[in-house]
Amino acid sequence: MSAETPVQSAGTFTRLRLRFRDWRGTRPFWAGLFTLLGGVPIAYFPYATLKLGTMSLAMATTAGAGSLIIGVLLFTLGLTMWFQQATRVFAGVAAIVLALVSLVVSNIGGFIIGFLLGMLGGALAISWAPGKAEAAGAGQGDADKGPSTEGATPPGSAAGEFGEPGEPRFAQDPATGGPTDRTPEAALADDSNGGYRVG
Image (tube, rainbow, N blue to C red; front, side, top):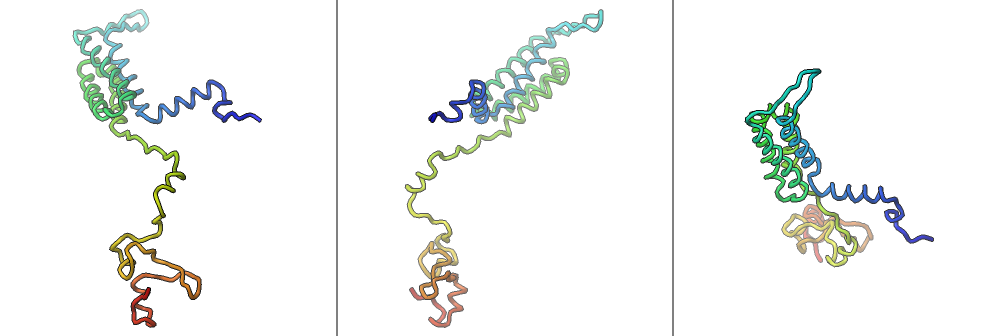
């Protein structure tokens, strides 16, 4: 019988896909991707020559250098979102500002395409938050924590006023073997001991 795990017995493509999925889940992946893609049309269109039938349309302007700078900065911010998650808020705000500036500098923000992608990537970067890592040894860690306090009331609560702080609300009644109510209302209703719980 083989001792291989399902991941080991899977193909190379499946292993790479699972590894990529784990990598993607720990960073604002889509924010970085949209920001990267937003920089491409902003930097490309001012230097491109488009052909409409037999007519050539050149978009190169005096602001071509500014468009190139904005495009390269958006590309860099996209990579920053992927590899430096701690600076995601700064990178997101910077991407939004650069996308807004590209409306004026770079042919209406790369014909609106780069502007929209940059705005979307920046907004996703600001709103992204890292997930909580699951405890690998949850069962082993529970043994080190000591006795469980689940079901117990916190100190100073109503259930602890007549007994020790943190006592559970219900306990086993020695006479009947069933649960007995330890709340102050139940203790006051008990006339056998003058309205107070003994023991």
